[in-house]
Image 1: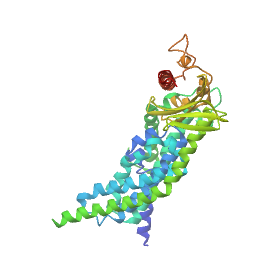
Image 2: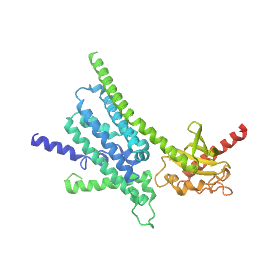
Image 3: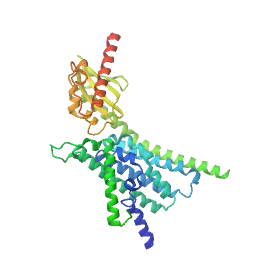
Image 4: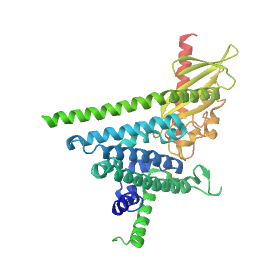
Length: 207
Length: 180
C-alpha cells in the first residue's frame, strides 16, 4: 500500500469521530439517537448494534457497487441493510435478551436510520471496499461514542444513575425532563455547541 | 430491454441471497428465542402464583389454572394493554377466593424513570392480596381504591390497574354466567 493510500484510509477512519460525526455534524438518524439515549446502557447497545449494521452494509454495498445498475441501487441497498438489521435483531433476541428487551422496537428501526442509507448512497457506492470498511468503522465509533455520551449525561442528570448504578447522592432530586424526549434535544444542542467550539479552536475550522 | 432484464435479475439475486442468509440466521436462533420466551413466562407464572406446582393452560396463552398437589389453588391471567407509550404485557394470579396473589410485567415500553417504574417491586407488590373492587387508583376512587399511582406516571399506573381489574371482572362474569 502506498503512503498516500494509507493516509487517506486513515482519514476515512477518523473523520467519523469528530469532523464528520454522524450525530453532531451529518445529523442523520436522530430518531434513534433521541429514543435510545435515555440510559447509558441502552445507548451503548444501540451504538454497537448500529455499528455492526453500518459496517456490514458499507462493505457489501461497496463490493457490489459495480454490479448494481444505478436505477435499482436504492432497493438493493435497502435489502442489504434490512438483512443486516434482522440478523442483529435475531442475534440480540437469542443471546442478549435483556438488552433486546430494553432496545425494543428500535433495533428493527435501524433499517430506516438514515445514516446507514446515507453512507451507502454517499460513500460506499462510490468507494473501494477497504475505504468503505474504514468509513463504516469511523461512523460506527463516532455514533456509539456520541450516543453513549448523550445517554450518560441524560441518565446521570435525569435519573441520578450511570449504567444502572446510582452515582448521585441520595438527596439529589433528578431533573426528569432530561430523560423525556425534550431532554435529548437539549443535550444534543449543548454537545453540538461544544463540538463547534472544539472544531474552531483546535482544528481551525471556519466559525 | 437488456437493461431491464439486468435490473430484474440483479434485484432477484440480491433478494434471494438476503432471504437465504436470513433463513440460516432464523434456523440458528429460533430455538433459543423460543426457549428463552417460554422460560421467562414460566418464571412469571411461578412468581405470581407462589406455591403452585403445575399450570394448566386453559385458554391458549391467556389463562392458566394453578394446581398444587392435585388441588386447584387459583388462576393466572396474561393481559395485554395499552400503556402511555405502547403495549404492556402483564401476568397476574388470583387465589380461589379471588384475591390477587401477585403481578409481573412481562414487557413494556414506558418512559424510563417514570412509567417504567410499573416494573418495580414497589408498584407491583401493591396488588398482592387486593380484591377486585379495591383495584383502582386511590386518586380515582378515594373510597375503595387501594393502589398508589407512580408520581409522574398516572397514565401507566391507571392502565395497568384498569387492565387487571377489567380482566378479573369479565372473568368473574363468565364464571357466574357459565355456572361452573
